Image (cartoon, rainbow, N blue to C red; front, side, top):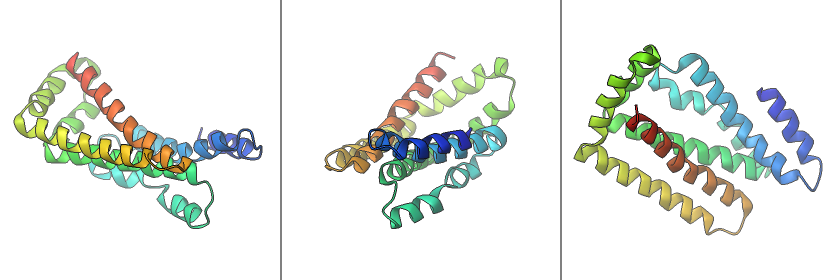
Amino acid sequence: MTGGWLWLAFYLMKRPKTHLWGDLLFGFSWSWLAGAIYWGWFRWEPLIHLPVESIGVPVAVWCLWRRWGKVGNFFYVGSLLGTAITDVYFYVTGLIPHWRQLMQVDPSLATPIFQSALEQVQTPWGTSWAVVLANALLGIGLWAMQKSDRHWWALSGAVLSTILVDSLFWVAASFA
């Protein structure tokens, strides 16, 4: 599907009315490709999560160096930053073993793993790190939102949406 997203991105970027959407879709394509590779084939190994999610970095750096596709590439970088901060949380709170178990167990047997992970999250250590890292995301997102350029808004949206997505995972785990 990444090829289809990229084709649509270039198609939209050719037209002034839809250029911005094409630009954004270009950056989203790298997040899509990386996510498809990781969650499709390597989801049980959290140590390579960030390296796989980073596969679009060379393209993003090249494009930004050429001042091309700034909105999409800033979106991709913001998404990657949010992913990195979420991964930091998993490491510092000791949730990595739970991650591995969840990716290898039959879904009908996941509830005890979710409950054990939630117990770890709800400790003072887990709660403190959640507050620190959520505030870091919030600070970065609000700082970027203060800028007047659209590419900063794209970064802001990607970073702030990390808080939303992580919260949805927490709610889903709480109801498991």
